[in-house]
Length: 80
Image (cartoon, rainbow, N blue to C red; front, side):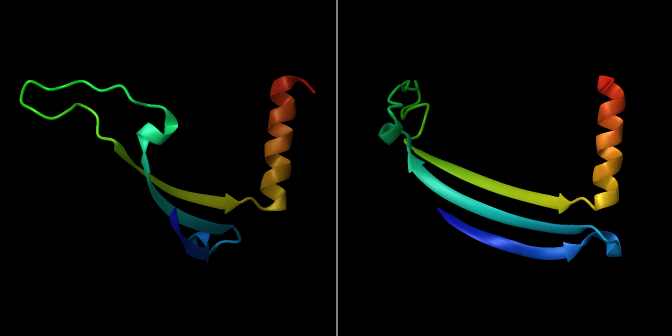
């Protein structure tokens, strides 16, 4: 699996910090016991043996104030 960190930044110049990453991998589905396939009338098969997996993710750290506000709203919804 190959991956790369996109780095960190301040969101829109504010106090929140964001980070991101991307990762890619290629697997052979037969190694995971997935052997089903269907022949096509035009030749070839319906499902390739190689499967490409690509992930892109971003996370934003909440400030303490945002965390407290979210906790209060959750407690109000649950009646806690």
